[in-house]
Length: 326
Ligand SMILES: NC(=O)c1ccc[n+]([C@@H]2O[C@H](COP(=O)([O-])OP(=O)(O)OC[C@H]3O[C@@H](n4cnc5c(N)ncnc54)[C@H](O)[C@@H]3O)[C@@H](O)[C@H]2O)c1
Image (tube, rainbow, N blue to C red; front, side, top):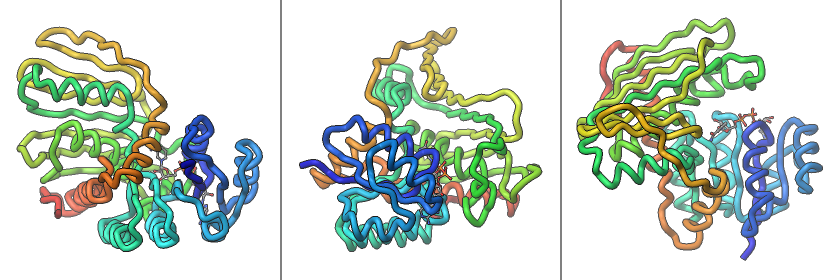
């Protein structure tokens, strides 16, 4: 069967999904909706699909099998619940929603409607990350003793859509948006959920009301510690995760390269080319729809990431360690 997909929100990341779909045999994209009409029209003419302004009208008229939700964070819950109730399977961009209460509403709607929802935690589909996971599963690097994740980027750059800088619309700043990738990596590669966090963040940006940096100490259920350091104020860019074991180390320059130390200097590991992460993500969704299997980035797993992010802000506000609520 060929699945019909529709894109809900035609902004930056929607293009990545449209590009992936354009090269796939098993899914055909039929429509895109964006409140900025000219955006919907431009994407529609580029990809030969139908434009809409109101996404609800698009879903009701087109009745797609799959809704790809690429909206600002404050609209994730509303759109995911609506699409699920209309009988669509859903690929929902990360983070799942603004808070765990909203995640619970999505989970309930999806279960009631008996559809499949996968949250787009793209780290799981990046070749270097998958290879790192494979190497870790072979156990020859010994016991994992810590994870160090660092990300620096100019978060407040002019090209960033301005809703990202409003807490009410985005949920938070760099730690919500890019931190959800870090927390995902630490939970997934570390093989256990985060149990505790202690965090300090800063609010020094000239615009908006979200944090621009954060330093977080986390500990997973197995007692493995991790740090996340993120700065969005500019400076030298960095996107690096190091996993430290008793017999060596793994270093990821996310989406760029993979390095291994077997006790000495890092050596770059060749990584087999693979299909684009967004293609693999859609294939994963189709597999789950067809087999009834639970996605790796399931709703419960993705909710746990939102719970960690909320605990990070709570820890900063209360100036004390927080146990992440289940
Ligand atoms: N997986 C990744 O690596 C990755 C990368 C970038 C963004 N994202 C996520 O993708 C989502 C979208 O981010 P983006 O960078 O594309 O943002 P964006 O602002 O570029 O796109 C959002 C689009 O939604 C449209 N929109 C707003 N309200 C709407 C409504 N009611 N109906 C229809 N359209 C509406 C906006 O006009 C805009 O075009 C976010 O959840 C973000 O965190 C994920």
